[in-house]
Each structure stands twice: as structure tokens, then as C-alpha cells.
Amino acid sequence: MSGWRIPSVLQQAKILLSERLSAGSIAVDATVGNGYDTLFLAECVGETGHVYGFDIQKQALTSAEARLSEAGLLSRVTFFHTGHERWVELLPPDLRRQIQAVTFNLGYLPGGDKAVVTRPETTLQALQAAFDWLAPGGIITAVLYSGHPGGKQEAERVLAWAGGLDQKQAQVLWYQFLNQKNQPPTLLAVSRHS
Ligand code: SAH
Image (tube, rainbow, N blue to C red; front, side):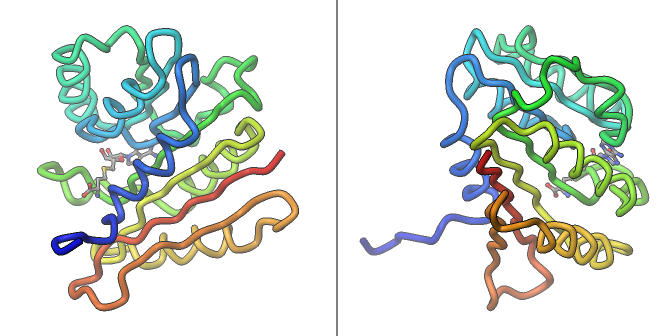
């Protein structure tokens, strides 16, 4: 087993998401960015499933759209060019309690404007909506960053929210490498029992 590594934060997020997704599933990418996670979700939900994606930056959505289109999977995705905090207003109401997996990748867009970051208030609104809309057995993953201005405060608020969820209703996991330098990202996962 030499060369074996514990899955990175991003790999572990994908493992958790893919375990809950199958053909026909509904998933949400709350922070589309360059669309790598959107593409992954679109592959997992198959031809009969669907993915909804939010991002406030046109640049991000253009890049994501190109990626999905190149893979021939654009028809599996609906993009919203607006904040994930508008979840309840925008997602079809019949999807309430029907969503198997939701992913968040907080912070700024890699290669984009570092001043445009996710914010605690809106992130928490979206996380609560995501939790409320999860199907029984559904999961939320969130990659948290502490290195940029405001990142640490946001991560703390998110962890406080998740840590307050009732263990009768949810499992809450915080996955992190303790000996990596330079404030590496950590992974929060929230799984809803029923
Ligand atoms: N830091 C991560 C990538 C994060 S991308 C990494 O290094 O891999 C985060 C995305 O969230 C950005 O594209 C940004 O435009 C988007 N975003 C910021 N606020 C948002 C909001 N309220 N709703 C939806 N997306 C948002």
C-alpha cells in the first residue's frame, strides 16, 4: 500500500456525494465557480437526474457552461446567475425534501476576483435552505477556507450552525488535516437521517 494517501478534502467530498447520488437523483451546486463540481454532480445523477447550480459571477457561469457543454451534459443542469440565498424563491417547490446532495465550495473563484467571496449571512441562509430541502438520507458537503479575509469568521459561523444540529436529525462531520501548513481547506459534511 505504499503511495496510499488519505483522501484529500476535495476527494473526500466527492466520495460522500457520489455515495448518495444515483441515476435520477437531484443535486445542487451552491457555488458553481469554474464548474468542476457541477460536472461531477451531472455525471453522478445520470440522464434522468438533474443538477441546479448557483453563482453570482457571470464569468464563473460562462466557464462552467463551457465545461458542461464540452462534456455533453449541459441539458442536465439549470444555472441560476444569482446568490444561493435565493434558493427557496428559485428552486421548484416540488423538490422540497427530494434533494439527495448539495455541495458548497466557499471563498473566492480561483483565477477570479479575490474580493468576491461567499459571506456568512448568505452562506448560512443557503445552508439552512439546503438542509430543509434534503431528502431523507441526503447530504450537504461544504469546503471551508480560512486563509482569505473573512474566511475564518465564515468557517466559524458555518461550523457553529452545523454543530448545533440535533444528532437525532443529522450527522455532522468535520474532516481536516491537522499538520498541513498555510490554513488548508477543511470539509464539513451534514447528513440528514429523515
Ligand atoms: N475557493 C474555492 C472555490 C470557491 S468558488 C477553490 O479554491 O476551489 C466560490 C464561488 O462562489 C465563486 O465563483 C463565487 O462567485 C461564488 N459565490 C459567492 N457568493 C455567492 C452566493 N451568494 N451565491 C452563489 N455563489 C456565490
